Image 1 (tube, rainbow, N blue to C red):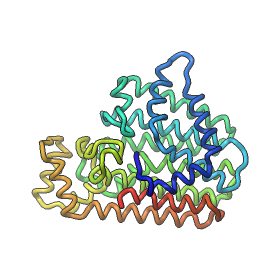
Image 2 (cartoon, rainbow, N blue to C red; image 1 turned 60 degrees about the vertical axis):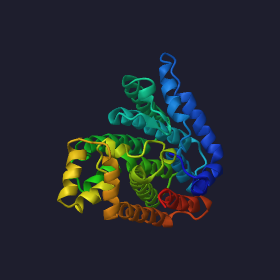
Image 3 (cartoon, rainbow, N blue to C red; image 1 turned 135 degrees about the vertical axis):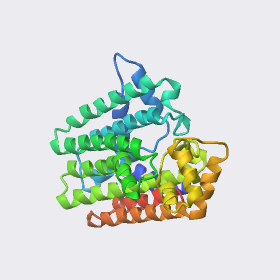
Length: 333
C-alpha cells in the first residue's frame, strides 16, 4: 500500500533506526524462500516480497524487542516468520477474493494461477513454522501458531459474514481481529517475549499491536471507497465489487431507509451489480456520513494503541511507535 512522503515519515524513521536488523531480516527472507526442487516457489514469493511493501509487521517485531533492550538475534528469525505468515495469507486471500492487483502490481494468481498461489502460500506457512522453532522458545511458538489459526478462522468467518446484511459491527470487529489484527498483535507480542519482557510489558505490546491492526484495517476499508488506486495499491471499489460488508457499509445499512436497504440487498447479498452502482453506494455512504464515522473509530483505536505504550520504556522507539499509530489513520486524513 502506497503512502505519501509526509505521512510515511514515522514508518521510514523507524525503519532507518532499525535498518541493520531489517537488513538481516531481508537476507533471511531471501534465503529461506528458496527451494531446491521447485523454482516456482521463489518466483511467486519474490513477486510479493519484493513488490515494495513497507515490511510493517516484521518491523514491529524488531521494534518491540529492541524497545525492551534485546541484544540477541532471535527477533530477526521471528520477524522473518511474521513476514512469511503475512505473505502466505496474501497469496491465499487473492485466490479467495479473485483479486487481480496487489501492491499496485498484477496479483500472483493472475500472473501464474490459483494452484501456484495456494501451494506456495502453504509452503510459506510451513517455512514460518520452521523459522519459529529455531528460537527454541515454546511461548513464541504458541503465540505465532495461535495467530495463524485465528487468521484462518477470521477468513472463514468473513466468508459467511461479508455478504450478510445482518452482520453487526461486533462481528466485523471479530473478523478484523482475525484477518488483520491477530498478526499485528502477535508480531509485537513475540518481540516482547523474546526480549524477556515482564508480563505487563508483553501485554502492553500485545494491546498496542491489536489496536494498531484494527485501526489499520478500518482505514483500508475506508480507502476502498475514498482512496486513489495509486495510493491503495488496488482498484477503488474492489470491496464493493467483491460484495464485502466492511465498516462504512455496515454503518450505512444500519441507517438505511427501505430503498437503500433494497439496494444493499441487491448489490451485496444477491451480487446483482449494475453500471453506476458503485457511485450510488458511495453517495449513500456520503449521505449518512459513514466514512467519517468509520474514521472516528479508527482514530479511537489509534489512541488506544498509543495509550498502551505508556508502561513501556521511554525513548525514540516508543515515540516512533506512538507516531506510527497516528500515521495509520493519517492515510484517510
